[in-house]
Length: 94
Image 1 (cartoon, rainbow, N blue to C red):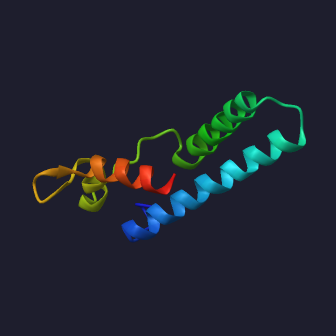
Image 2 (spheres, rainbow, N blue to C red):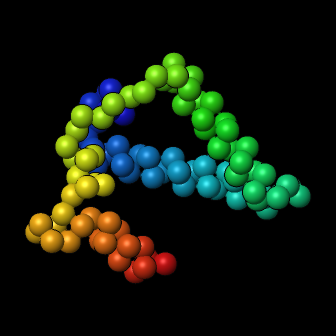
């Protein structure tokens, strides 16, 4: 998404939607077959890695957008790390 100039917010939302779709597929396979969840998840991980290697031609894609760096290393008011906000949000939504 970086190579196509997506807005960082759009890129994050699309990434989360793809993750949800993959989770639904995994859940459907586990629910309608007798395959253990661990095996289904492991297989889907390998499928995802294969697609990623094909798409990137096994090369690293660097992200030079400051908005993405802020997600992992940013602070709110130079006091509260973004990770604390994520933990609070996860606790509130679960």
